[in-house]
Image: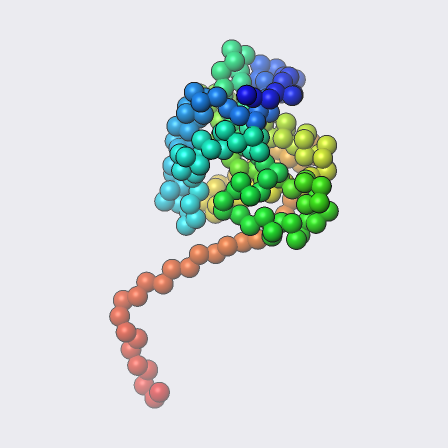
Length: 202
């Protein structure tokens, strides 16, 4: 069963959108959004060394897990046009280390106020920037109210295309916030073609 404690228009600029926070997404919507999720992030299959896309069973598990909150955007007809996932239960995110964040933000960890933003995607048939911003605005409202820390990761491909700057701009528009990278992972590859040639004199 879904919880919608904050159903209301997203903002005056997005009067035909409603953003709801839901603990469980119905099976039909989950299946439809898994297809959109795959289509949206498929390009990253060859653009990032680390796996960027959840397997189907992982995605559907998140849709049913009440610890993972789904911010769902609906248009004026009730059709789902966008979704973002965020959780304060970092153990539900398989590719991160919760202890890393708990050590750096002990006060926030003690009150359960460290969040992780899983994914944000928008139906290509709608004005994507408006829906994206409306969902981020709603999540920011919650984070400000809780004086929380929110973390996320962006692969080099997306960061190079300005995703990080776009999130920074949207968040700073409505919140007094400090945003900074907390870690960096660099992947190296060594391609071997034979034995090294001995240098003379050695």
